[in-house]
Amino acid sequence: MSTTRFVLISRWRLHCPAPQVWALLTHLEGWPQWWPHVREVKILKRSPPGQTGTHAQLAWRTALGYQLTIDALNTRTERHPDGHGEIEGQSNGDLRGQGLWLIDPVTPNVVDVTYRYQVELTRPWMRRFAPLLRGLFAWNHFTVMRAGAIGMGRRLRCEVSEIANWRGGTA
Image 1 (cartoon, rainbow, N blue to C red):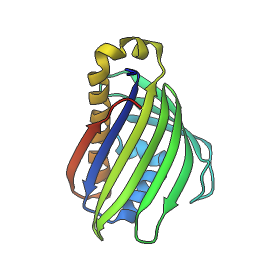
Image 2 (spheres, one colour):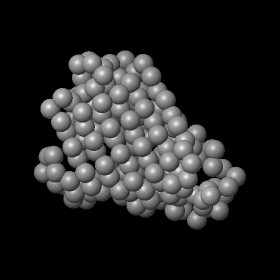
Image 3 (cartoon, rainbow, N blue to C red):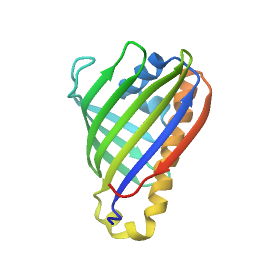
Image 4 (cartoon, rainbow, N blue to C red):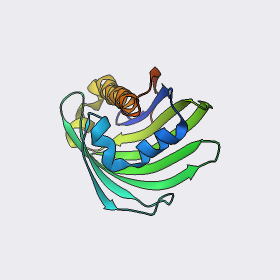
């Protein structure tokens, strides 16, 4: 079992239409305005709307106070007429992995947003201390995700009625 690999899943239930969530998630430059742990987003390459290939660098400040820089490359984008959507990408930098956003309308004005991150720690200090700090690293991720859910709700002026997190086995 690798202690440097994680599968982390968060689900948020927001009381707003799915297209609003889609618009907020796909506008990366706006993330620092509503997600308190995102310090900066630099678009390195922009693909046309609805197409894959957008490449961005995100600077994060974690709940534990350390900073991370992640290069994210959009590898798949699917948006369906019924409001369902998927945004998939790969990350490199301080964390290496694959992330998947799922947007699932429950009703016309309620949507479940799920993020699944299969990730490996790359920083030497994180890899060295992962056997001892594995639970703390997961808590840190989920705290950052919770802040994202609350920030998204505020930005969209809607209620967030559920925030759930799961930590799976190693990737």
